[in-house]
Image (cartoon, rainbow over all chains, first blue to last red; front, side, top):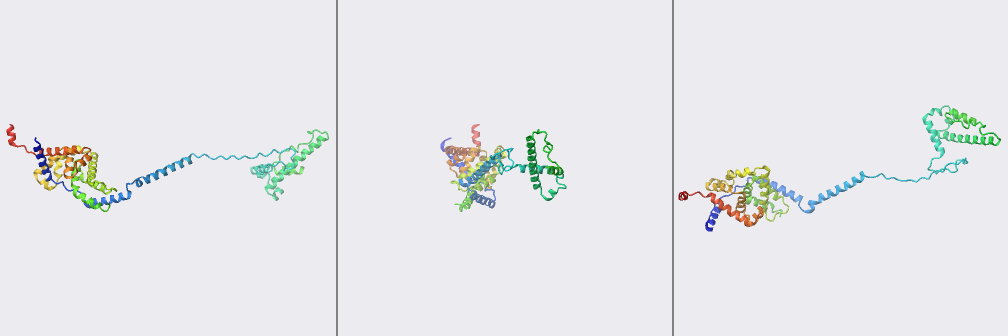
Length: 200
Length: 168
């Protein structure tokens, strides 16, 4: 096939194609433009710039990271230990009879309050042992009763100790002294307490 | 620019709507949907493309190929391309027997040749733009166009009885 014949064939084909028209688009023009306008408005709002595209994702990622860090710190938080140094109260000496010397610091519980607590504990265990038919109790409250009990116990101890020393001075054995009173058990009832107080 | 969008879109629809539909027919069976989606996507572009015509052809091509792959009907469609070719062109073309034969001959061409013919002849794209569209060089696009025309002309050629007599 010569070049001229080839070109003639191409021209004939072009003429043939020129007589053919593509079919019109089978689409609803109104619907198409409605959707196009919708998409255009969306595109204007959403945009494609760097700021609009990455601003919100960046903010969301930052907040998620901060939330994760805070959550981790809360979960793994160790309780804070506070060390408090308290001065140890001095042990009471035998010669300390005043009850005021070598007193423990104000913040430490004293012996009286401990005795009060012990008495209160006993009272809580069985109040009927101490409360009935007591004229002292009728007149005073529980704290006064406790203080009186502690004071009487202390006086009883001092008296017994003084008697023992007197007996030893006169050549009696310490065992000769009737120590049944001093060895008497701590009164458990009000009646025993009253008897003990009368015996002193 | 945004104020001119509707006018430009209407102009593109009037001038290229049918051609884009014909172009999409080379791959899929629902070309009108593909063209509509492409036009809507063009309208949604915040930055209007520098060459809307080439942009539309590229989007239509990609969408048509994707649609054909999704439906897995490309081979069946190519096999039935000749049967559907009679609806590729308008009624005047269909009524003319010679043009109808030409349409069928065009449909029987390989896809690589067909798309170059549609894009250049009816779409008005340059061979350089077609090269970018199809991923080839402009010279390859030009060579394919000429090969398509020669093949079309050859298929349209009616064998001459005298020639056959002479050969016998």
